[in-house]
Image (tube, rainbow, N blue to C red; front, side, top):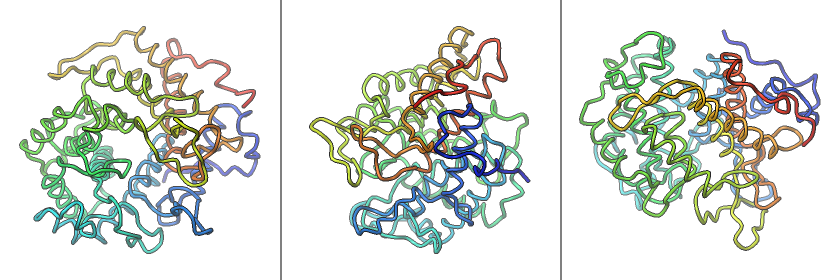
Length: 425
């Protein structure tokens, strides 16, 4: 069984920024572990709204659980990651009838919200908390399909049963019935067509589609297409829908931080589109303390008061940019729009690595003295959802990716001394 990094008992949390990089990653993981529950889920943040204001975040968002546990893979704790995905399966099982019904007859996205799979549930009972807002978020299903297939192809298929595959096949049907239509997207706003949702769903289908799209990621081929078959028609519909939206996120948003998911984890767009997404985000959304979700975003959480023209900046986005550039640096080739290889020389890859370092250092400068990643900053005001579980996970992933690349190619990817040990905050 994979072992978790040791606890933070020996190092004061206030000493976070003076520690070497590998120790900062360990301390960040200890923070993430405090948000993990015995059933394998992660509460989104410790904020409980006990004062009666705001919206409680010490609950389970299904998307947040999957992205929060992603850090375990990069630290070699696969058993803990599988445990989290088994919990997500259990949540889906509680709402299996909704999934079956919606895969046959589409509920009305505005007037029949109680017929959709809920986006968040109680952390103990796993029951829905409310059906009052936009639960219909297809990227949740895409991420689940993508990563479940990935875990099976990495050798964890023995952890899934025939009953599980029946449920996954019903999720596939749910996706096929309504996967490439308007939803509420990653930020729970809409309904609109979102390229980030379409890309997530297409990535999930591609993982199970037995045509070798993701084979480059695996040392050996594992045929999972016979367990939950995906038709060529599903793939063609998804590709047509995604290309019809790109490079925009939606009709109302020319670009959006959520589009970074098209680069990582899904790598579902070609090399030129990846660069175009990164350029749009960097040029239009990057701030000092984080990345704005999209232009004119008005959400600023509880207790923060924006000045005129001020928009919340999410440190999560800095980690995400670092991860995306690390992925570009990792391989010596990508692909173009017709799946022909695009070769990357060392100068290009070193450039991408340096950008990954840049955004990681900017991320750590935005973390609290305790090493927590806030949900957002509004000016210099820290959002109340601090730490935010999936943002904490992305800090771990981005840092570990830099370490891995520097260990694998030390002659090309060299971490600056100032990153190894930060001397100030």
